[in-house]
Image (cartoon, rainbow, N blue to C red; front, side):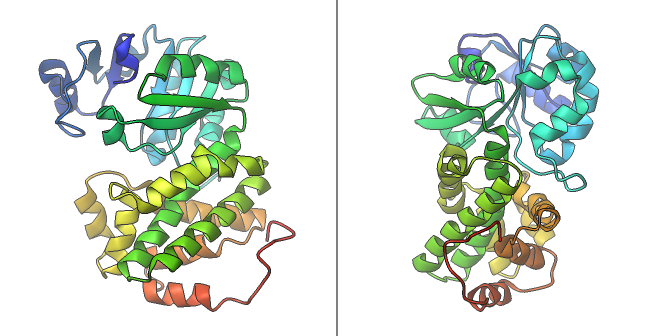
Length: 320
């Protein structure tokens, strides 16, 4: 919708039903179906057709599908195209962020033009033209500036920076903390507990990010603190709703089925715990969320464990 203000857009979908709905009715029958789409948007189930001649390729698939989809799409991307990832997650097997996965798949000529888009941004509010501010990160910041000029408008403001690792770590791991917040809120643990979890969660995200080579200041920006605040407190947050369901004692499969959309934090939690262990970084909140997701603990037990940990200084001298 943002791109179609001034450009022709081809959108790819696995679903023929979705593609037909967009082309015939100018609405997506599955997501945000109450918003009319621009006549400049054309849908297709053919990746080659979607990518032919595209100068800007925005990737917005679930993180667990990224490698599969982009392995097929990679050879079809135009040589000079900018690739923007709006995907948030960590690959379980490799510990790679989505930028790392894209570099692993795409030809080297594309690597300088991979941009990560992140920040506090519920899709419905963007579609409703409510003010939204995000960040675009690319190692070659000039490409982020190009995307900034394309997507920015009176209700959607983009900032740019070069710390793509920090932006992606922040964007992925805030979903883990949001599940923890949902569990805490579901147990009626109070506002003090919510504030503490968010603050210590940000510290945990920062430790992991810095260990991966990110800049600490990134985690105080839109992709870090900004997205964390939104995802942990907003009623539209899928990951927070997962936590609320777990606190109510509902089975994880039932919660996910009811959402009808991907809650990235579930898979990211397991990947984050594995990555933190590889890096030698302490990640108590993520580990307790994983224990609840995998049925090893109840939310109450996880909360008691966090409160009962060995006392320590708030100012950590290392990644621990």
